[in-house]
Image (cartoon, rainbow, N blue to C red; front, side, top):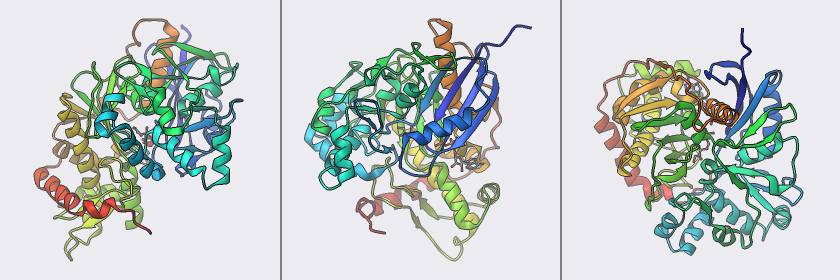
Length: 480
Ligand SMILES: Nc1ncnc2c1ncn2[C@@H]1O[C@H](COP(=O)(O)OP(=O)(O)O)[C@@H](O)[C@H]1O
Ligand SMILES: O=C(CO)[C@@H](O)[C@H](O)COP(=O)(O)O
């Protein structure tokens, strides 16, 4: 029997670190592990390392190459010795809402940003977090000291990749990749280069930026003797794990909700809905991201006193939401750009004030947000032939059943798997092979829950009516 060549893929996501060890030739998963992250929007990167050590314990024997896919945008500031100077400020931390407004105006408005980096920053983008840190330094001793010491700014996957290396030769040796760096706000997908002037604009001075490694490059070696591939942002890793083809749109329901597709050309959306990200193969990844997805279901289930499975059953068997609309902006929202917003329930009557109706409205609300995301991709001429559902929330039967009508597309269900970690493993196998293209790995599809017929037009119209009429209220800071 021939010995398997093993590769590992890591997903350092918002809620957890997940590790897959795969056969480099077929992608078959041989071993897997996971460990949770703290539930916070500012996290000491040491917590990710602890989670990695727990998740990978006992899995790494025989692994020849590894890559990390990471939650995008998180700001990790390092001093000149490579020490972390402040907890990482994550993509879902909305503190930089005012900084975002200022930065957009200072460069000349949304069009100027779309011209510079293809995207209009929202508070998730790293560039806005840099400005927020600089402003915070004025009134906060800890942050003032962090700003004084900061010598480099890197992303979660960059930091994890560097930590894995046996030989860490200072901050100059840190690398990133096109997929992840495209979410910073200081890199242009059209010119494939840094816009260091935008770092200066945000922070008032330059910082060391990581070298952008090539898609199949080996950037180091681990202490356990594996080659380290470049790694990438989690959505770019998922696109690689799914081997997205033209006409495929991935809709992921993790902490974030994302809709994205691979494209041969960069987009430039001055409305700010579609971010002009790059993918992990040298192409592009137009993407729309919401801040609230799977946790809308877990929070609603908790409120109703139901386990997730009972919540799901209630949502799917409910005869309908009967006009009950739930705007799912529980953690503020990014798309639509309402960082100060809260969730909102409208349409309560004695008839609709039922647990099952509320469960149904929660699933419909999060899918309406994702339907708008898919429409925004259509508006950028991204073809939508079929939707591939992934992420923890795609395990919901109610999501599977309602998605075809609300997203207006055929929905397929890749076999439930950790596609970010799988994509990172595929990148590691590619780097190990030295081949010009990634290895071919089969992605088995499973049957989603049978589609439920609903009046999608009315559900989406109700959602838009409530959103439009409450927008001024949801735009205001709201003290709780
Ligand atoms: N059957 C299910 N129904 C609804 N939500 C689910 C189900 N299974 C898992 N989840 C949710 O999926 C989320 C985790 O998804 P994941 O894609 O791993 O997120 P992330 O990548 O942001 O860490 C959790 O919020 C969990 O509650
Ligand atoms: O900010 C984005 C994409 O722009 C998010 O998709 C993050 O990358 C976090 O992903 P999850 O942890 O929710 O998978």
